[in-house]
Length: 274
Image 1 (cartoon, rainbow, N blue to C red):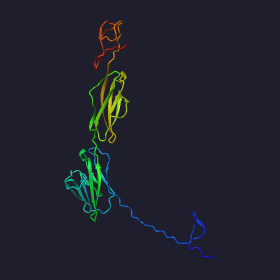
Image 2: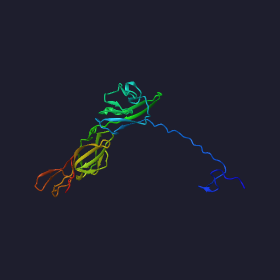
Image 3: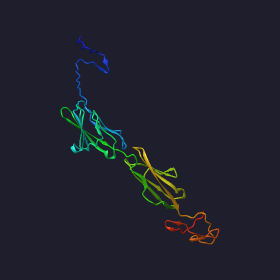
Image 4: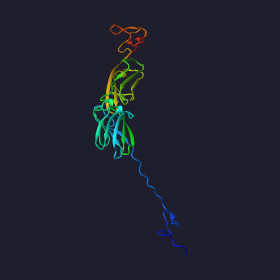
């Protein structure tokens, strides 16, 4: 006979294991969740000057005594914007208060009608009833209502020789760096970069070149246009028999004097038939 199986145990196989004779105990431990980390996020994330922006606070525990907001990355009284006491909802302006800031009950900082000078780092200090301090940093970038500077070409040169190589450069000021687009007479050309390389210049390359600069954060754009002329070569002339091609003066069919074609380097020594 043998002893009977223990309570709730049988000799059947369950889930691939045979119930044994011993008693097993399972130990479980409960770990409290880690406290949420205090974070600061600008809303909206890419504001234009003149907008109202909130430096939104998340992860703040309940029952905090007060919030202190500072401009920059240090707890300097000269950089304090506001101090907010939760119990009384009293806001005390600091040395860095501009008159446009206010603190919400959840600790978030409202900045009205932001300017480009509001861009930079912000520091939030929270203090709980045990006088323990937690610090969080935020960064605000304010964008202008237009590109900082309209696109312009770095060279005043607006002409090029046949078969020569020319590079057009377009520069502007924008934060972040702009994306560029080039068009020739309204048709897209080249790669989206701040320069356009034109190799083996031909008559088809003559026309209006437009550089378009666009800020992908603010969706603002501006453009500049230059008209490029191609020089060199002689078209529409008939060479008179017996005159060498190296000559610099010819007679056309009307017996009028025609000088060689002009270029940036002076007189073209070689004439071309069309």
